[in-house]
Length: 72
Image (cartoon, rainbow, N blue to C red; front, side, top):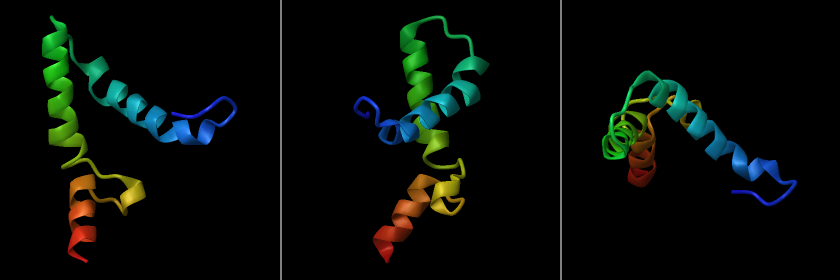
């Protein structure tokens, strides 16, 4: 998170939370906080990090991009 008057540090997190809300949270109705927590973790680990394409990574999922960098 950024300091006062330094919005650049905050931009990636704001983008992530917007994506989380638009692509997952506003699409599902949760009965309990525990259900929401499990679903959000599953979405992040199962979809966002492993399948969703990210333009900042050359349109690769983060896990694929990291594995390629480690192999190089």
